[in-house]
Image (tube, rainbow, N blue to C red; front, side, top):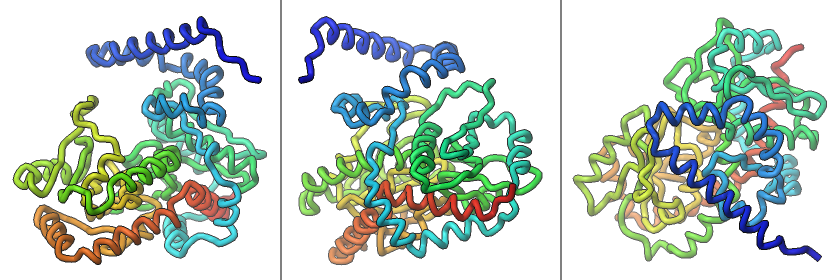
Length: 412
């Protein structure tokens, strides 16, 4: 029989938790130079090692990940590691592998890898040497004897752990269960381009801009945000769909997000929304580096609106487009050259309505009002695409095949 923790222990735990929240809340309002000093002290190389040895094994354990405390704290908001392996359905994954990747996914992998051949360890070493200053923006993962070997410059503080941790969890699972064999590759952790080396080297990336030559040859891989959030987000959106059926939704196009983007579409869209408040509800959540919590709307509450729009940030829209497509709202998507691994599988007017400017936005809304049956068909097809192609198991499957094909290009 499990024994309840003593009252004194509970008081100590909650007291410690309160102190942590008060401390980091106070740090958040300090001047940026002071914040940087605090981050260096608490998230520099030595504290990071302590975190990895002491805290990470507990926070990333499936016992904790699946606990009510984890859900209550919503640990992903604090940059703590989400361990997708705790939520993988192995039987479903095996069924996906047996069925094979859909044609669009196979074409994406083939297109991404076609330029490369005879990839050597020396090529990857040379790229790392040439771009030493990027040690906090790239990760080199090696699988050796069913284990993940992560290489990084120990002199560069690893302040932002989440992308590395999530990918390390995924690769460790796939290696341990022998879904992938020994390999060696470089992964870009940032959502913007990296410098090229003297010799073309394959760089794996979560999103890329096809109009930027350096990025065009990078290799798309499922992003860490979707890998870490898809299971929890799917449950939230599924509940929201029941709460907000189509006939109860507000007849407006809705968007909330940050200011950071490369196309300037966000600024133009928010300004344009002020001219049409009866049709569009759009606001920035933040200025650079700060978030206005009063304007924050949880993703599940976006489903109160008939129309949602996905707008690129630095690169694509990460996990937003996935839960948009899974919602029972009609998705408007900025037409752009920025892509993620699954974009070849989604089609305009089949899974979403493409928009390019203000006129096309108004035209899209009018089209939707005049074609209710087509709208419901698009919403249905988008939802089915997500269910059949963008589950956690689908992402693991894609990584397995991608690394298998990549390894065919490698030489010792």
